[in-house]
Length: 197
Image (tube, rainbow, N blue to C red; front, side, top):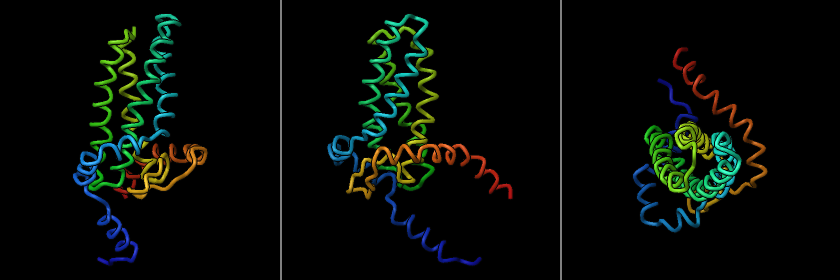
């Protein structure tokens, strides 16, 4: 087996990445720095717009007033929760092993978010709660996965210097989103093709 310089560089980069346990431990030891100072306003803003729109649409058959109330509740909830979960995702984005980090991002974060979200909307009387939560689950799994994917490629980062995040403008991030969406959607089929060839 021939080892190339690219292989050596890739292995060195992977060794420099923190373990998931170390990254999560850092979050627990420094929660203010990680969650408040590292609040990811970019994921909060994008999520609030998309999720509030989704809640409006799923609750519209109960009337405009109730749909608007569900929209407002979701917008406020999404800003708070997705800013915090975005901060967590940003902190662990390069943690190894990637498969375990993926489980945290694709399952643990959405499950936590949806559990709290359910009780928030139930307390606020969201009329189409079941339909809203099903739609929210689908969106949460794909949304957190996409955020992780984008953050690993340098987008949607708020720029916490302590974790090596680069600062880019929100407009710059939004210009890269169409290409990132395409790359995200194509990642699965590409991986399958590589295994088959």
